[in-house]
Length: 288
Image 1 (tube, rainbow, N blue to C red):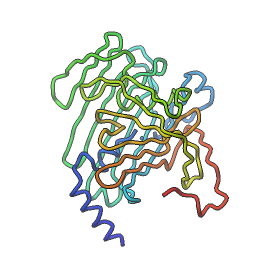
Image 2: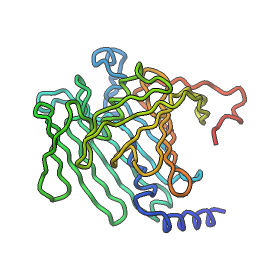
Image 3: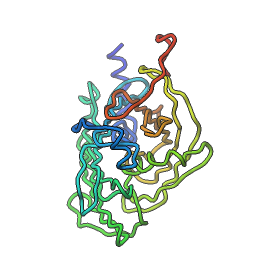
Image 4: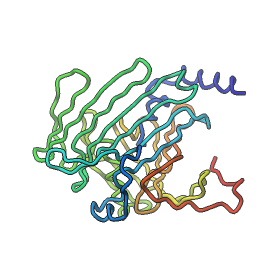
């Protein structure tokens, strides 16, 4: 059975264009906990629904075959250009025999302004098989410009809107907007990515109770309408399940592709409180 499953997955990797493969989805909108002095006072001090040390780890699967792992991690807190920031680390790797088939080691870093809730800097390091790319974006909110650099190319400067996000910080800015997430409504965030600026529309689709191995949990289901590459993919329809509480932590991320869907499910977390509802019959508790 394993060998036949591996054969099917191998054929899938050969047939699906590289930019639609698991490797491109693994770089989540996905934290080793370096500081254990997390407390509710930290929430009050920053007025943010997340704190230093928050970590979320996701299993990433295709047709139930786990082939990747994604991590979202608020790793550091320091001053950057006289602004207090969180360094948000996003990692995506292929795992198991899928890694033997196609090695993925994607890493991204975003400097998120704790007070103003926007990005100061983003760096994306993509390593997928023989494909390598490094992108760096520096935001200047005072002069409303962003400097973009890819690999060894000369830096380019573009106009941006005040408060612009990179595609990673956008997730964390969105998590501060629980009061705005109303079913049937949309909200927008100014975004700059891949030399383009635009308003990212986020549609609030519904509320849904998920059934996971940890238990049941209530979520808000959203659909970001990204036009560029990032933690939210532009290829295929993307859906995100955020826990329906103050933290809005992503519980599930799903993107439809040419054949089936990639699904990232939360498997481990630190530095945040989640309340899973236990099953009356544990054997029945799992979504398909």
